[in-house]
Image 1 (cartoon, one colour):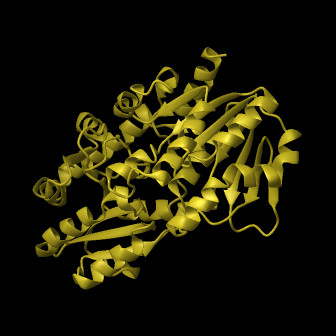
Image 2 (cartoon, rainbow, N blue to C red):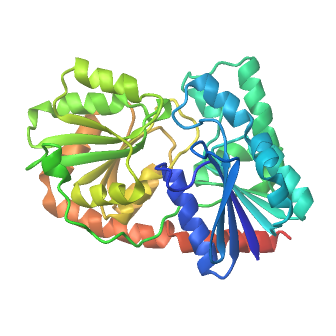
Image 3 (cartoon, one colour):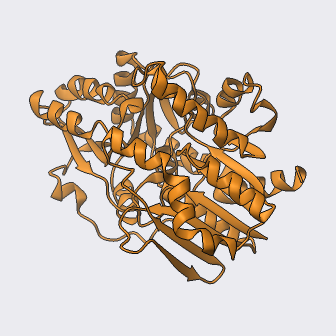
Length: 397
């Protein structure tokens, strides 16, 4: 089978979604399929570039900046994604038909391109839905109901309409979307995934380079945005000040990065270090060197979101401490698996208590490391995700 994988980022992008896409593409190839990745790239000099390695081809299309752009520029460039990709690479895509289109959200702006390719190739379509936008932005106060919100809702509708199946990342998200008549019959749960293999461990010195020798380091890696409620981390850092052996390391990018950097400086939080995002190999090397993973989500969110950063923590056998919105499936996942400790945001005392328990109990940490590895293999492995997608499409032909 020929499979097209349509994503807005792909390595060498440092985004966690790029790693998800790469793992899935490589797993489809391992299962004997040909894969064409179509992705946005704002660093290209030419309109598009195709790289081929065996059964895997990557078609990169030059687009305007999306990740890291201001809100207006990002919105304009994302809205143009389908048109930009078709104008640049339409001739190539006509000559390289695929039987199945797997596309990933975020972004919500692939609907027009997917619908076009679906007709052209007579292909089946599978949407991996990981961002229920614009509703989450409304829930956390980033958007108000008005012309812009309803414009985004129209693009969301088209994105869903182009899909034969829609895969949400948790049972709670399934319930959240089943109420919608336009998508309810298409839905299924597909957990996030990662490969279990790690890059070879290199001699690294992140602790010494960052002044963290002798510290127990709580590590947060990934998007630094409104939905993550980074003030939750700042309150935790304030409460941990009396424990000189504890430190927090934040690595990532996003709309809240500059504000977070300023807040750390203004509050003189010497137990927090903030770094820009790094490549996937360096990120996994970091994870193997530090002690526990942090997850935080805005309490106003109504949808359930199991962040992709959890996969890296599991992959590196790190215990996880999470503070999330009410109704999030991550609560049950961590409690039942024993891979971490979880509380509801904004219960600051419970978040702090969980961090202190992990800090003080080496035996608990070791049990959680073992549980993390088991949880990865049982629920979040890329082979399971790839096989489910193929099985789902075969069942709905």
